[in-house]
Image 1 (cartoon, helix red, strand yellow):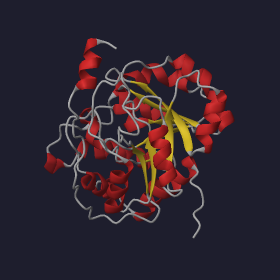
Image 2: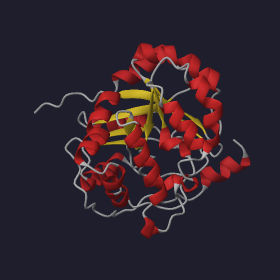
Image 3: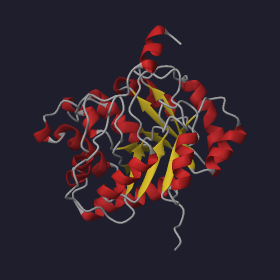
Image 4: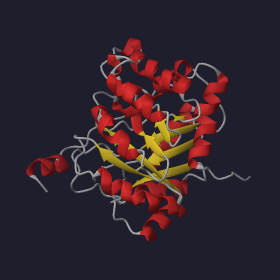
Length: 304
């Protein structure tokens, strides 16, 4: 490990989420899904990766479940965090505790054995995620990721990608060779203050014209990170609403709790209430929060 990474690993834990977020005014439809969160720790059972670049405060499944009860969220997809690396046990544990309402997206290496992909799929993982982000580093090449996609198809899993805004121009063509559906994180991490006509957002929109692609309209607080609190991320909301209007069947939403590697600590209640502007009517919210996640993630039927 480099000296810088060792220093990060030894740093005091950083709080990234509100202990008592606002209770939202918006009432969500039954079986609403938060399609992008992480769980962190407890480190006594699930140690952080030794090569992590930051040390966030623990955010275990019990805290996540409590946040969701407060928000009126009944389903969820937990994305393995780079804080835990490719040891997916922390997410697997949360899925098992979720009673069929929680599923996962794993972090793996491109040479992951087929047997492990099948095991993860049986445990409730619906996809694997690859990062193309400078602040995360250590990512796989796009060619290696694409070579994995036939094996993902055999396991019934999709590909999730997280990339720097400007990389949409470089990655768009290769990603179209994927043999499985592709889910794009956080609206492609565009700079929302540049507006919908900016080249990066336009490239994202063109990519979403291909029916294999889906997008998470999460991260209004990341792509409009410096908006004053009273503006409630209006630039991010505007782009999310445009995506929901243009691609109504291929958008899902998430809080991104507990908000790692952020510029500030968002209020999850504010993020939920923003849905009244992102998807302004009940039918649009039903599609975004219930129908689309059900189709993409294949939640099991609940009994009893």
